[in-house]
Length: 195
Image (cartoon, rainbow, N blue to C red; front, side, top):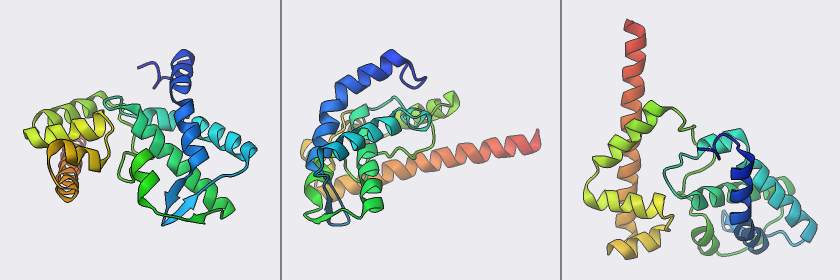
């Protein structure tokens, strides 16, 4: 995938496609721990926008994106994290309602840039096998949340479930994948120890 390899044309295409959306997030702010991170100064917003894309285009962040799902939730979660770091350094927050912008732009439980890289082909194959073995409701949830980038609320409405049911199902989905990856790593370690 050219983007993951840092291809200039791919990076430019991603930037042009998402820059207005990220500008909107930076302008409107984000929420953390019940307080709104809001950047009023235009020059600071420009700096912050540049910081977000610098982080998004770093090798670690590019490799942290698995390429199987939509990039938008990944980028917006990364943007939210950069804004939180920015606010913590400057201690600039205003009181606010935590749910509105977090769910609108970057759900707190979306994948984050600090995820380990998914660049190993064997790991990708394991993930694909895991996803193929899911039950129909769980497979649909995965598609809605991680391929289409819907919030938990929107996924719940689409599936006709409560948000709590979606959270529970998503937790099982993630735990199952973590268990499968852990078992594969343990098997690989045993194989190295024997061989």
